[in-house]
Image 1 (cartoon, rainbow, N blue to C red):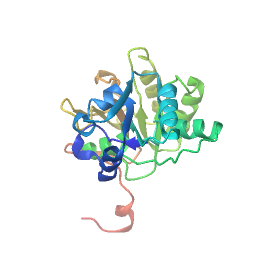
Image 2 (cartoon, rainbow, N blue to C red):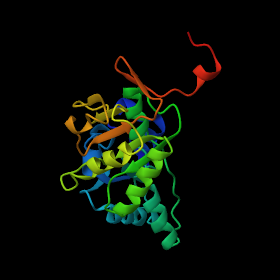
Image 3 (tube, rainbow, N blue to C red):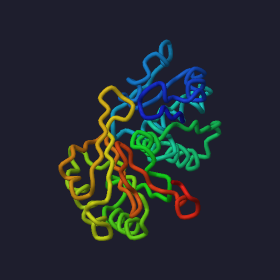
Image 4 (spheres, rainbow, N blue to C red):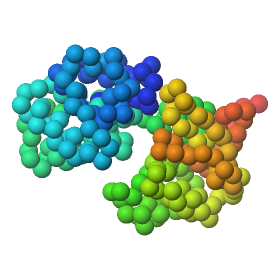
Length: 243
C-alpha cells in the first residue's frame, strides 16, 4: 500500500516513488492514478471507480499471491482513512501468504495544517463526517467529546454531493462548547493546481465553500489567527518569555 500524499508530486516521498517503480502492477482509484501518470508508464495498471474499495483490495491481494509485485496506490496516507486497514482485514480473513508493506504518505491533516500555519501544535482529533461505514450517532458523539475536551478538530469528508447537512450539524455540536469566534481553516485540493485556502471562524463557516476535496480544521480555545496563519500554542508562553 503506497501513499501518494495530497496530490502535488513534489510531496511524494522517495520511498513511495521507489515502491511504485519496483511494482509490476499498480492498482488504484482512477482519480489518484491520474495524479501520477509519469510514474506508471509501462506498467500494468488496474483502475476502478469510487466505492469499489473492497474489489480493489481483493484484486491487489490476488495479484500479490500470484507472485506479482503490486503497488496499491492511495491518496494521502494509506493508514489514515484509506486502504491499509481493509487490506490487512482481508489478508487476515484468508490467511494470505502475501508479503505486505505499508508505505506512508503525507496525510491531508498535516499537509493542510502546513498551509494554514501551525494549527495542530497541541492535542487534536480527526473525525470523518462520512457515515457510509460509521453510524452518524457515533460520529456525533465523537465530535461532541472532542469539542468538550478542547481538542483541535480535523474534519475529513465534510461534504459530498449526497451529504450536504452533516457539516452544519457538526458545527452546531462544536458551538455547544466553543464560541463562534473560534478560528477555522478550510483547505481544498491541497498542493494541487486549484488549491484554495480560507481562514474564517465557526460563526462564518457556513459562508465558506466546502466540497468533497476539502479538509476543515477547527481551532481549540487557544488557537489564534496571525496574518494568514492559524496558530495553536503548545504552551511555551506559559513557561518561557517569548517577547
